[in-house]
Length: 538
Ligand code: NA7
Image (cartoon, rainbow, N blue to C red):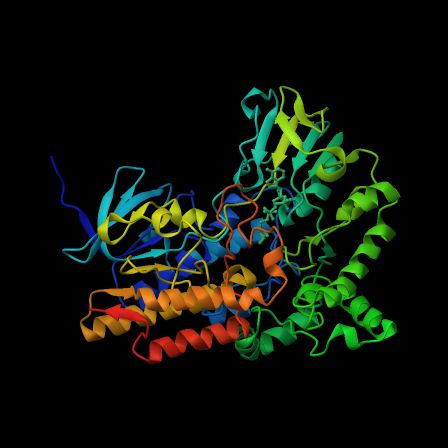
């Protein structure tokens, strides 16, 4: 017997940081009837899936959290400078309980499709569990780095051992003791995992396609006096990070590195290196991202550090990045990454000098004509960043058009929040918004609050649809591309440039606005203040 389709004011897809706050905001602030669908077994999003050894956030814990709950900011005690994956999950579980979120979240339920019904201005949403519901609004809270990239390696089906992708790691963990392990990839994930795996494995072989500039995380306990001072200053901190460039307390040195003396810049470089974390990346000289000569000076310092750390000069040379500007790939933070290559059980297979991976064999990996045996392969090969998870929702906008069709040459969005032809669909930290170039919770909170304000304004005005205008969207896309074209980012084969995946159209995915997240926030607020300029409301 057919059952009536359930209707919601809003369907939110995903229950990580963004989906959780979106639910809280729409339900508790606006009183809407909301259903959240989450593919995972509980809240957490990224932090639910990424359980590989050493998984940890690279933003400082005191700002990697919700700021809407001021009491929780005071109460919650992070155990270290950077929160470890299990601790972030505990935090998010606590938030879910504190705000009674789970009653509106349906777990283990993947959204598989949806259509916008132009006659009724409603979305119909389908799930893998066979459910179909309707909603006025759909909010994609699917994360920027959630669609796993497992490159189509030839022969993977022949491998007799076990293999895992870091972003789909078994909940019970993997025991590497006494095993021969291969890790494919040397991005931010691998840089965290490799030192941990090397401690257990009998032998570890690291397959590097592109060497990476790493700087020390310098994790550890935070001085209780500092914690206290930060808690007392939270209002100001929140204000500062919201207005900052990267959603972090990092500010460029307002000077060209080319105008410094060798002694002066060495002092500054040492200071940032000693501070650890993103300081070297995001608090460096202001021309580092713009001028190749300036960039070379910053990069040289890091190259010297690799040579100082890695004992075998031939291995050090292979670990030294070549052919792209420092900082144009995501900065990995490490704890003993380069030191790990001094261990007798660790070897490096570098695509440039030893040969690229050719195939997975029964017993391991063949690269450069040589077979490297392994009992376990760990693929730390990243994600179809920013657009992958949105496309995977298979949503159909006006005229049945899909994002695959609309985005053949890269994403087209207005403000990274909306897409022309997809009314009442919002993306939290979508492509062409600051997102991955910011401390995520700052950008997530900004988008959630903006979307909530927008829906509230529409309800007050009796409007039922909002949709990005094609010309406003086109202007935004051009602006995103124009501002990044003045930087060194576009020449690098990074996942920011969609270059990590063969066949993905080359496009810069986030937004690197001239004033960072602070300027972007102002722009979004202006759009709202002008009655949602660039959007058509009906
Ligand atoms: P990344 O940063 O995309 O790193 C993936 C790594 O895997 C990187 O070293 C890639 O080399 C390598 N890779 C990808 N495809 C292949 C193939 N086909 N063959 C060999 N090697 C390959 O992903 P992460 O998970 O480390 O980090 C993603 C983000 O999560 C991170 O930036 C943080 O924001 C959190 P490449 O450099 O592309 O040559």
